[in-house]
Image 1 (spheres, rainbow, N blue to C red):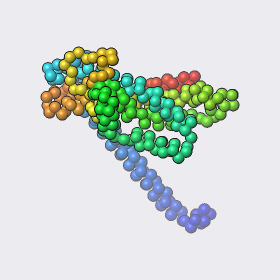
Image 2: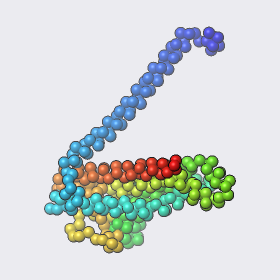
Image 3: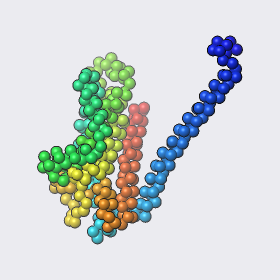
Image 4: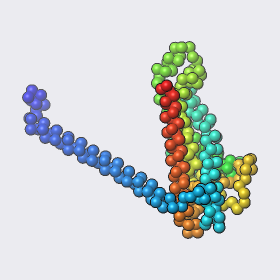
Length: 303
């Protein structure tokens, strides 16, 4: 009763206040559950629609054969192969540049005015629409550097698209390494470079690898940059190999989907939904691989 008197509240007032707080908490919890249910419902609806409409098209022939009869029959193996080539090349190009850039910003750049400006620019580029990167790649790599519509131009454009995200992800992964580990390394007499190589990077590796894999996979799934720099819709002859492949355009899943709908019913709808399902499964496999790599790397750290 002393506490009640101090604040000038009666026992009934305190009870009403507690009831109001409980009601507010219940409403807030219900709002969160409703928002979560709506989000999950949308996801289930999208995935369910793609699965229901795409599964009838899946077969070994669909996955392993090239298109036939003017793209109205056959399979989508050239598109799958082209997407894998674009993703692998993007990963190889962006890995050293993005990781080294993130290491420099995290460990050597400091926090001066120009460094903050660079971080802000990188953050802005990470949110830039894909169409901007596509136009940039078309103007610089396709026209100015005279690479033409080619796999090489696609690699460079997609690497440019994924680079800001990988730089930021690498920087954040390094900053999450406990300072106690670096201080212990310095106490043992390790130099800054040795500490970075032997202590910091191994502990930041799960986050770095996850970001690189996810960013490369996301880049290879973007239709616009590929359409403007590397994509072709149909190749009648045999696919080029070796160095010749780098100077030619390539068929791929995102471009195949975009052109499939733009053709106005010439391609069977079942084929389009099947292609959509294959692209979705490819992205899910990439995400699962990133999760698996991160889990194994963390297990090695614990061991």
